[in-house]
Amino acid sequence: MRVLLVAPNASARMGGEAILPLHWLRELRALGVDAHLLTHERCRAELEDSPYAEMPISYVADSSGERAVWRFQKGAKGFAWRASGFLLSLLSMMRLGKEVRRKVDAEGFDLIHQVIPVSPRLASPVTHKTVPVVIGPLNGNMRFPDGFAKDYGDGSEAAEEMARGLSAFTHRLLPGKPNAARILVSNQRTEEGLPEGVNRGRVTHFIENGVDLDQWQASSPLPEGPARFIFVGRLVNWKAVDILLDAFSRLDAGETLTICGDGPERGRLERFAKARGLEDRVTFTGRVPQDEITARVADSHVLVLPSLYECGGAVVLEAMAMERAVIASDWGGPSDYVTPETGILIEPTSRQGFSDALANAMRDLGGDMDRIKSMGQAGRKRVEQHFAWKKKGEAMLRIYKEILGGS
Image (cartoon, rainbow, N blue to C red; front, side, top):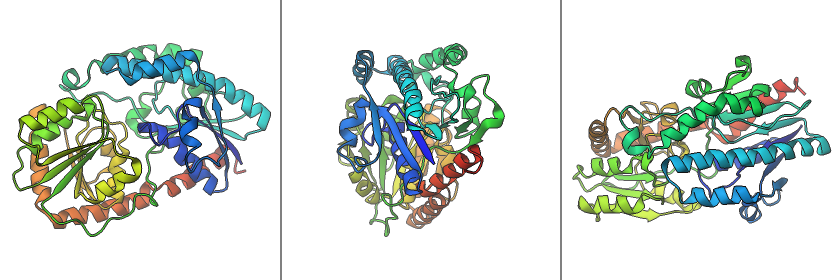
């Protein structure tokens, strides 16, 4: 079976969804699928200096327009960041769509799989007259919790509304999703964001994130107390790290908090922590290479992710795989992963209420190492059963065979 994976970005460094095509390429080839990846030139330097260098990857040259939008987005925030992201994805996918058809006709693939973008509303130009197309797993159609968009959205919801308004028009021009043989969605919220014209009988629920258990291994025993909390992620407004710091400032049993990541909010958050006298208990590491994050998580007891706009949240699954308890917002992706046996979900009802509940959860869980250990063990078991990339690869292969009639 020859499968062409399609993704505008394929990277372990960019963060977010860009790493997903690499996971699928690795796992499908390990299962004997002749999988190839088509991505953009901007990813070449990294991939040719990585374990993927020997795998079949081809590239489409970036246009001057794409490079200009890419440079603009790196310094943008809020509405401008999201709007430029939509534009970049659309420009990149249109160039990839044309190359997909040329490559499939020239090289004879059996199936095309567009892995990202994961947005259910973004139109797709990936189509073919005779070769079936799979799109996803998708994850999106997010909104901020009531009352949080003004302070934490930076106007980004306006970009989302613009995308929703343009959705019907763009999907008529670029009918990849309505024409797809199968669309994979992570949850009901995402399915509700699909465009009109999609045959719901071709929609399958399939969570997009997974865990490489060779990298994220169980980490026992737990380090000695007091409790060590860790946050891992980009320091952007909607991650609500300021609410986490506010909640943490009310703990007084010698607990520590490590903030792993970088981003436009870092300076403000460091000042926020200093104003609350937390310099000796809160550490900002800056950007940490992927292979060092495992050590940071292993040296902690509990991962905390208070994000208010998290479609996925793979870091939650990675912490669970390392037998670490999780405290997260009961909003978006973490709600699909965390159970009462593996962590604590907190509904973001209001800023003060969310901060209070975070403080209480950290205080209660941080003082109970037996409960942390039990949650960590349950988390590892849940990841092994439902989110290991090997199992996800096997499930995807079954979908491919079903579409191709069992071939």
